[in-house]
Length: 235
Image 1 (tube, rainbow, N blue to C red):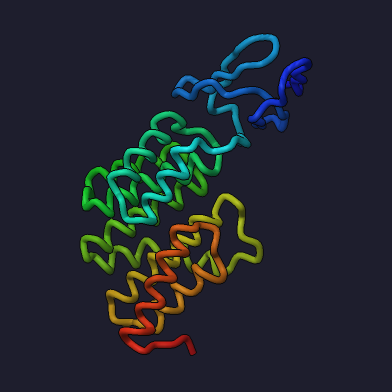
Image 2 (image 1 turned 45 degrees about the vertical axis):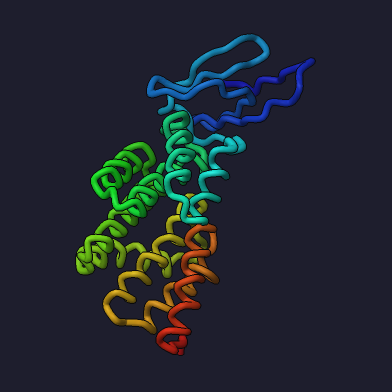
């Protein structure tokens, strides 16, 4: 696809890069399993999702509202907003859309709706290969922590954090996932009584892998609490 120049109109808000490396500016009208419907100067058309490599698009206001509600522990409001984003932009290869897909599972975990969380993570894994798949595996580890299956959680999270520590340069599509992974790894170690190891992982989220704001805030909260409750410090 060639670049479309929309003469006589305001600049397009979205940029779509197809898997053949070509870039197109257009307005995204809707997203469905059949594809992404876009509006151009010459009219509208649909592009199959499988043909789209990435999308640059500002997140809808519901995304920020959902994140704010989640941080405030208003999980019902977070669910309403984030589910709206996922339902409308399911499968869109934009960073915020993939983050919302995994975050939906996190919200269900916070609400103790574990079957719904597993379904959300499974769908995220299917729709968002690569970073989304890793994020889903982290989500399943989070569920295992909620079920107090620490061995199962460790089995899922350990390879992810090990790989993260080996990365010389963190891939953009894995940055948020790694941030979440060290937070979950900290939860596993804290629940196992390894307070020093837990603090180290929480601080890795805060300092080394700060791409996910929610994970950073939660990790900082737990790190502060552990210092106060257990008097631990990283060697």
